[in-house]
Length: 431
Image (cartoon, rainbow, N blue to C red; front, side):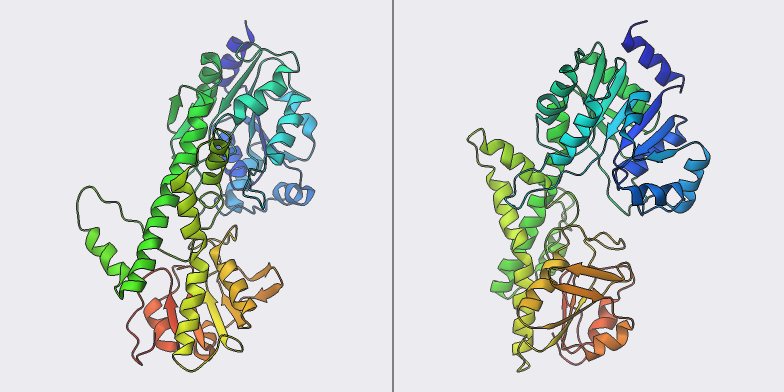
């Protein structure tokens, strides 16, 4: 049989083995999904500490419980720091970070390192899948040439696809298994084996014509959200000037049963995708002499929101004859989204840093984040929320965890600002 036929047969009979490179919030859930589908799976990570913890049954990813990890380990799931395992498997999925540099340019160092590790050990008959979010052209321009340098013909000896992760940490309704999986292959044969593998582990695979289409699909999804959140944030800025309630406007607009999608303002963008992914596209287009104007404008608005909330704190304190310097300001919620512990790109960190720069005595409370270090801040979550609210000169709700009752918090605060919704009526007439 040809390498293509052999690999398809091994996948269809569940004899194929899979290596997942990167045991983070994407890779670990994917590895568990492949285990549950009946494949032999090994997880590869450069962190010896992370690998040891996983091998001991301790999951660091909220979407994979310790119990789920234990079941996977009992079913044969292995974790290692040894890249030589890549030579022994039938399929390799690369799930490594793709952050931005300080210049807002893509940092592909993790993808390049993983790709080089794969290329150094690749053998005929293997499938290589890139899942890391990146600009259109990465799979064809970065990953595939490294394999071809080893003398392999893509689509004949080795098979390459791009299938972007679509993880939304903390969700239980849409998981790695239930979220549709977009996939583009370098050749029809590549796509066929990629679809066959993922069809076994996820409910729906959505094939597209090329890796570039799949790469752009993921970036466009997040650009759509970033731009619309930027528009909602700009509505908040405009309503602040007009003396209107942006939330009332949004709720009224949302009553239209067609032609409107509800997006809400807040303290800015956070997480692993929205503040980062659109810049991959705008960077790629700058090289083609095109300016992605919506992306740039949305980024300008969204990244400016922490300063807007700093100004709101300053204004509220000024109304009471207080300066920010020397005032105790309590930030509620520092994770980037409700009910998770993820701090990546959280706008709360910017708000804390800005308040600290202005001389405030900054405190925070977050039931999911016991401690944090950011810039020169080294803080622990206040132990008594109610007491901290009563003692603070100003309280800012930044991340609306389920356990926060905005009305009750506002009632106990001297100054209360809600960045995630309308301010509840305050019995004492405070902000």
